[in-house]
Image (cartoon, rainbow, N blue to C red):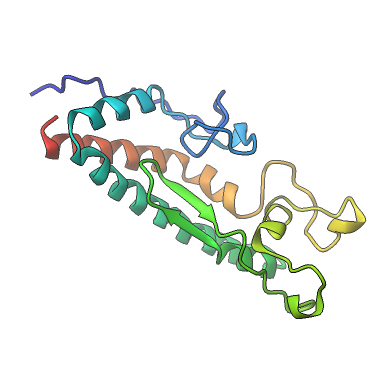
Length: 187
């Protein structure tokens, strides 16, 4: 039986034209080149969620599973970075979020644990959010960023390289998950 709603066309791109999260929507600090774009995704999700109240619940399970897998891969990649203590500590704060699309959030207000200069010896406490961008994209240009590896522009060291390596798998798993949920619910 054919669905009354069109399933989104499978368009994979790590270099989408929209700003956004892994699936290309919203204002996520302007990481335009780090998105996976799926054409007409949000319109399709909206139509399916109106058709069945269970759709969002089941889709959240699919997205959470994918996000947990990405989170684990990011932690492995963080361990492979040279001088990886910063990357590993930041990666400990990454958590998969229960959203309709695979989403990973940083628990940025947690204290950053530094062996060389612990928070107990600082006036201002350092959080994971304070260190994330330096650990991911590097620094070393300014005096205040000398503690980070060399600056890599938008390419990153552990989070975005992992997402880019797996972008086609992420999109395929997610779209297959949508297809599976649609079939299970008989939409």
